[in-house]
Image 1 (cartoon, rainbow, N blue to C red):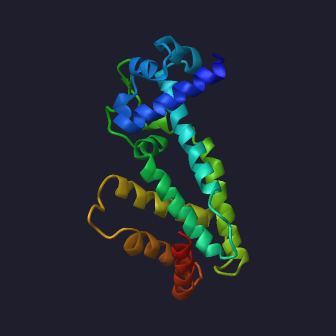
Image 2: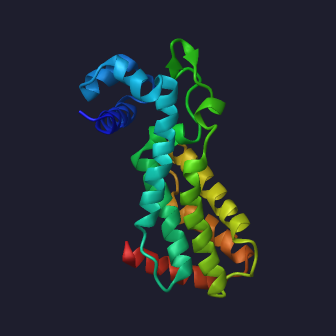
Image 3: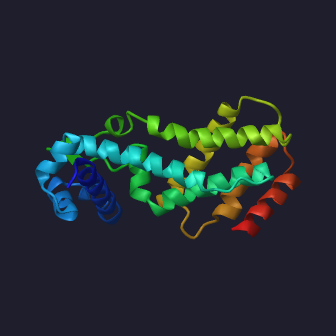
Length: 217
C-alpha cells in the first residue's frame, strides 16, 4: 500500500470516527482499527495525533470549498449569494463535529494527545485551507456589486460580514439552540436580507431572489 493511500485511509477513518463519536473518538488505537493499519502508521504519516487532528480541520475547509463550488452560478447574483450561505449551512449540519473542529470549537477535554489537551489555538492555528472557500464568497459578493444590487464597496469586507453572520447562526443551530424555534425562513434569510438592504438592495428585490432560490431547491 502506497504512503498516499495509507494516509488517505487514515484521514477517512478519522473523519468517520469524528462523525460517529465526536472528538473523543479520535484515539490512535481506534483509528488504526478503523483504517486497518497500525498505530505506528499514524505517527509515520502524520507525526502524531496532534498533526492528524490539524489535518482533519484543514480537510474540513477543503470539503467546504468543494461544497461551495458545486453551487450553480446564475444570472441572479443575490440568489447565488444566498445559495452559498445555505450550502455553508448544509456542510456544517452534515458534519457538525468536523465543523466545530475546523474552527477550534470543541469541548475543553474532548481531544487529547498523549494526555495533553489540544486547545483552540492548536486546532485553528492554520486556516490557510479556508481561503479558497472564502474566495468564493468574495467572488459572489463582487458579482452582486457588479450587478448593481448593492453599493460599491470592498467585497472582501462584505464577504466577511456575511461569513460572520452565517457562522454565528450555524454554530447556534448545531449546538441545538434553535430546536423547535424559527430557522432558515425566520432567522437566517431575514438576517441576510437585513445585511443586503443595509448595503443598498431592497427587501422586495431580495425576496424575489430568495423565491427563485426556493424554487431551485
